[in-house]
Length: 159
Image (cartoon, rainbow, N blue to C red; front, side):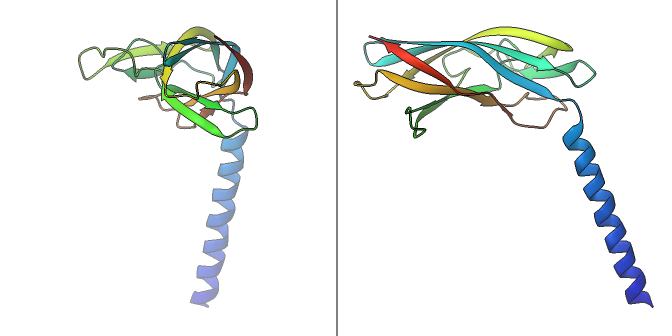
């Protein structure tokens, strides 16, 4: 009898966890949308510029914590070949000087927030004339725990 009751309790907990996971999946989220990306070779570095949009549909403002300058500070650029092989990844803050710890708070308001990101990336193949890029990352210090990932854009590298 005890074994049967434990089994029923375990099944009930799994069902509750499963329905909570389904509810979490369906909740409004934050979307990361790249609107434009360019790449320009300068000596041994390729300078990527990305215009992006964070769309906050969570139902409330989110507070992001960063030692740098914006709600976009938790993002990184992933550069791949046209076939999808990863050539490089770089965080958006690598070339920036941090502000004093413990960081500052930035508000990601409900709705859309636009930003322009710059990624100078070294050691990419000199012969590269095109690539694909996508943005990934998190909203550090916020209660939004999901990983953000954008669509992939094809980019021609200006020489």
